[in-house]
Image 1 (cartoon, rainbow, N blue to C red):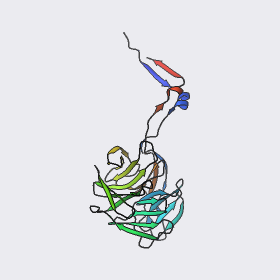
Image 2: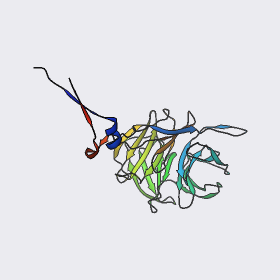
Image 3: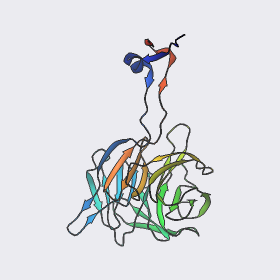
Image 4: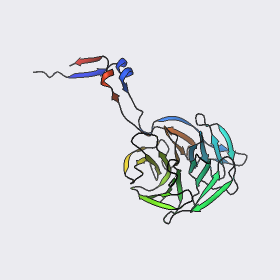
Length: 266
């Protein structure tokens, strides 16, 4: 006896009424050229953050304030003795916390570049390559990553160590904290020691929830940022900044809105 197979096909009307597709993890929703040129030099981005409605991109000796949709430069800031790789933005003050690549963090007023303060980093940090400021945790807002250590650090806004998390990876180049998405909070970690990968962690214990390839070149991820809906990352090799999907809920069909279904028989 021949076997009859039934393939259920949801019509376009049903999909429109009761089904939704989520974009794949890492899918790019916006991007722009983030290189910076002045009369003397061509700069590639080495850090990025989101705050005050703008994207902030750092280049060692200068950083720029940019319109998220187009990348248009609002202002370029040349602070004295500027050092900065990745960046963390404090909404309440407008301060930028800068991972300097050295054993200290520099805090600057974002619109002028004026130095507010510096503070040292915990023992074990060799190269301050990634930083994030979590506005939802005023007593423990700063997260710090190292380019070589298999660990993340959680600090006060003045640099006092509160705790650290061991990780299953090294080569951290970016951090971003998401308190907006259900099921969170999420601590996103960008790793670029070879392939560029994004890890979503539980910030209370550091366990990995999931991971996915970052939409940047290998060995080139430069900073991470969360804007309330999407992640941002800079590509140091291509000099581009990408806004991309960090959560994937898959296909959901609501039974009450299923609509018409076609049955195909074979």
